[in-house]
Length: 103
Image (cartoon, rainbow, N blue to C red; front, side):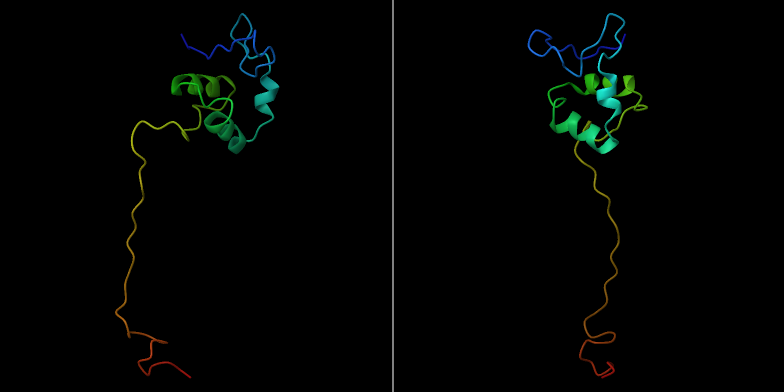
């Protein structure tokens, strides 16, 4: 069974994470009005920052965000893309002071 975050409704009765007895979001429109970028920011830096990754994932899936954005849910160190940069020796080509420049 999916484990959703359970907010303390005695402190915040209007919590956007509030669910009814059937585990359906009470304030679903709050989430559906957000674009993807805002949704990710809210879950990573805003009201969702203290949720576990499993709670975030379950919540995102329940609002119809597919399998949930993978941004902010890391299982290891960040990965970097490496690319090859071609290098030309100094003086080879135009504009390098080797007399080949038009001028």
